Length: 391
Image (cartoon, rainbow, N blue to C red; front, side, top):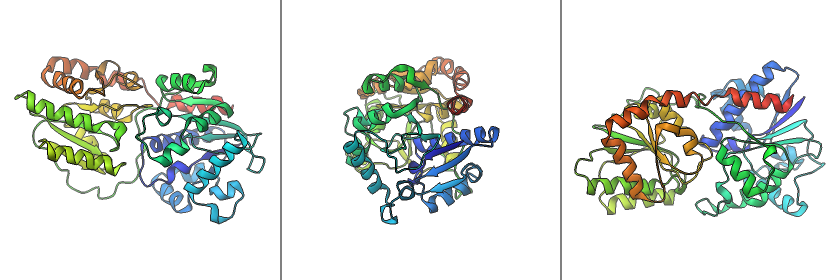
């Protein structure tokens, strides 16, 4: 059996939430391959230099991938067309021109997996499996880059969804969005939850001293971009400082800069409003991140839209409840270990934080449920889904 996997998403400099999912998908595909040695895997679109680095960090990939071809080889184009951004535009142009994804010129596989829904072409005899994480890109909320909106739009998503043999989604919320926004029959959509990440790249400077935060604090974890809603979170923190003299928590913001202008907007607000107790931890190592969560009072995750939300599970791993949004997939994950707020209203975010800060008994009650709620999610579900697809 010949299986192709689109690995273009792993070319990014940073490991994002979707990249984290892709790595775990590859691990489960590797486990399936161990059970079925006749399976041959071709990775498509991963640059040679990046492949070498990923194989160092995750040695199982050496045994998983039988062949790696760059995107120009897949398209049978000269090396000139090996630029990822250019190829995405070529894919998009061909999709618009042909009004479908089929091309007899590209290699045939028994199955081809797209762990991230990006413009792509497949042989008509190949069974395509697309994994949708969320449909934020077509929500009409323009917080993504122009280039991202070009390649993650409703036309591309509809083409991928219609061509796909099955559509794998990682939350009930995304399943509903996929059905309603793309007009896809629900029988084609397979809900398959991810779980707590356990694969992490080799960490540099592991011996660097951990910088302890003095006093009590809460933690928020995400990429620094508009969708994660840190501006309203900082406004909520500022509001609490001004309204409640007993509110003495610090706010530790852990993440990496995805959107520089948004990061600068955050810094301006903090400086102009003289907001106290906001501590940024940029590009924090994973083991440090877990220590910050462990030593926090609770965590906050007020995102506007999430297909899943690994930080919620990371919080539960450290037995911490979470203040999170009452929309999208977040209530599916947090269950009865969360306080739910309207992410559009910073005063409501503030109310949720203050409730969990002041009501110690309520916080203990939510904390008791974190381990139980974490156990709802395991990677064997993804393993079983892959087996059902390729069987």
